Length: 87
Image 1: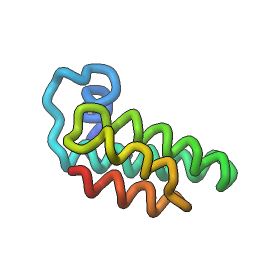
Image 2: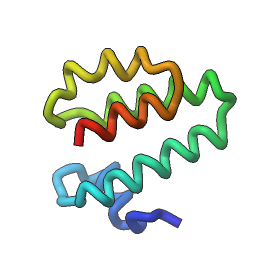
Image 3: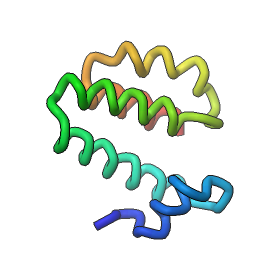
Image 4: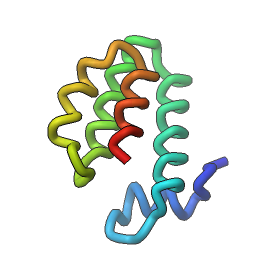
């Protein structure tokens, strides 16, 4: 079950102009990270999580300077932590 609710997921992923709270966004992003980690081997999951977080960072303050750091993160927890500090 989506912690932010299914409508929040749809708004975030398919209708980016509609308002979604930061809490809803963070819940959805965490859910996506969990799904990626469940479905892929660790090394592939890390690469996919980094790509997703880089995409999700679009439009956030300091995103351009943080993206390279995301791709240098040694593990999923470090990448997610870096992303969440952008908020």
